[in-house]
Amino acid sequence: MAYPTRVLGPVLVAALLLVGSRPAAAKTELSWWHGNTGAIGDRIAEIAKKFNDSQADYEVKPTYKGSYPETLAALIAAYRSKTQPHMALIFEVGTQTMLASGAVVPVFQLMKEQGVSIEGADFIAPVKSYYSKDGQLYSMPFASSTAILYYNKDMFRKAGLDPNKAPATFDEIEAASKKIIAANASKCAFSHAWPSWTMVEQMHAWHDQPFADQDNGFKGFATQLRVNGEFGVKLWDTLARWQKAGLYTYGGRTNKAEPMFTGGQCAIQVTSSAFMGAVMRDAKFEWGTGRLPRLGGYGQGNSIIGGTTLWVMKGHKPFEHRGMAQFLKFLGDDDLQAWWHQVTGYLPISQSAVKRLEAEGWFKKHPNHFTAFDQISSGKTTANSQGIRIGNYQGVRDTLEAELEEMLAGKKTAKQGLDDAVKKGSELLKEFASLYK
Image (cartoon, rainbow, N blue to C red; front, side, top):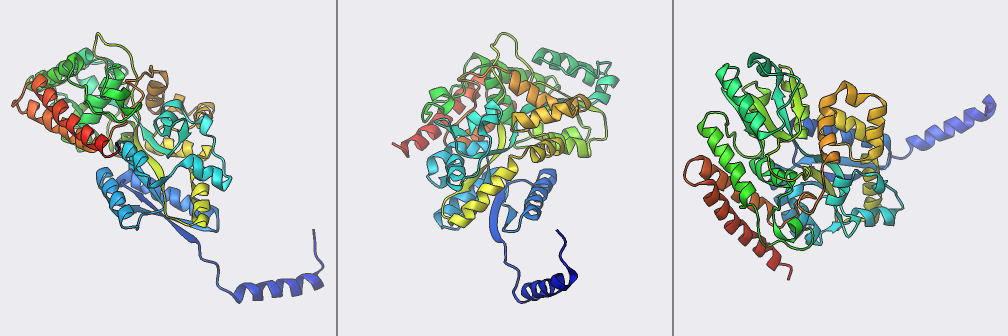
C-alpha cells in the first residue's frame, strides 16, 4: 500500500520523534552456564548470538564455568545460595543428580506452560529415552555424543594396512597395532580418552553387559556396581597385555589423550564423536572413523549417550520462562541441528534433521559424520545398553579410573582392580540412594 507524500511526511516525523523520545527497551538477560572450551565453546557462543539476533526480547549470555564436573559443582553451590543461572549444560554424569534434585523445571512442563511446542516425538530414540523420566522429557537434548573409533590413514598406509578399513574388533586392533609398531609408523598404536566412559561404561553397554543393578539405575536408585564379571576382567586383561607389549598407551583421564591423535602421535583412538570438530580443525593427516570395537563371544548391545543436555533451573520469573522456552525451541530447529552436527560431530537430535542431512547428501560426502549416528541407531537397546543413570556418578567414574591406573602400573591384577572398584563404587551408590529414602 502506498501513502500520499503529504500524509507520509507527518507520520514519519511523528514516528521518528517518538522513537527518539524514549530509550530502546533492554533485552531480558538469560544466563547459560556450560563447561566447554575450544571449538565447542566457540560454537556455543555462535548459537547464543544467532538466537540473540533472531528476536528483540531476550539475550542469552553463555558463561564457561570450568570442566564438566566443575560446572555441575558450581551449579549445585549456586542453587543452594539462590544464585543459580537460568539454564545450564550438564554432562550425562549429572543426570541422576539433576533428576533427583528438585531444582529444575522439567522441559515438558515448561513448554506446556508457555504454549511452545517442540517435536519431542521426533527426537532420536536413545537421546529422548535417556533424558526422559516416566516418558516425559526433563532436559533438552542438545550436545549428544557417543564413543567411536578414529584412525590415522597415513599411518595405516605406512604399516601396509588398508586405509579404508577401520579395525572392527579388539583382535583386529591388536593385529593392526603390531604392524604399526613394527613398521615404525607410530610409537603409539592404540589409546583412548575418557577411560571409564570408553573402556568400561561404553564397552559394557556395547556388549550388552550390566554396569549396575536396577537396570543401570533406570528402575530405581542403583546400589551395586556389576563391572567385575568375566567380560570386564577380560577387557582390562587385554589392555594390560597390550601395554606390556607396547601396543597400548594410556593417555590420562578426561580428554587428555585426544591431542595424541590430532598431533599425529597415535594411530588409533577411541573417544567421543564430538572430538570430530577438533580433528577436522587440527589434524594434518588423512583420517577415518569406525564403530566401537567388539570383543568376541558377547552379545550385541548399543553405545550410550554422552555429552551434555540443557537443564532449566527453578527460581526465575514467568517472563524469563517464556524466553527460555523460546530458546529451547530455537535449539531444536532443524537448521540449527544440522549446522551443529556438521561443525562439531555431535549427533543431530531429531529424525527430521537427519533426513534433511541425508536429502542434502551430507553423509555421502562426509561418511565420518555418519559413523556415530549409524552405530547408535542400529545397535540393540536393552536394559544394559539404554544408558547409565546412577548417583555419585563422577565419584564412581573416578574410582574406576583410579583402579585402572593401579592395574596398568602393575600394582593389581584386572580382577583385583575391578573387585576393588565394585566395592568402593557400590558404597558411593548406596550413599547417594540413602539420601532419598
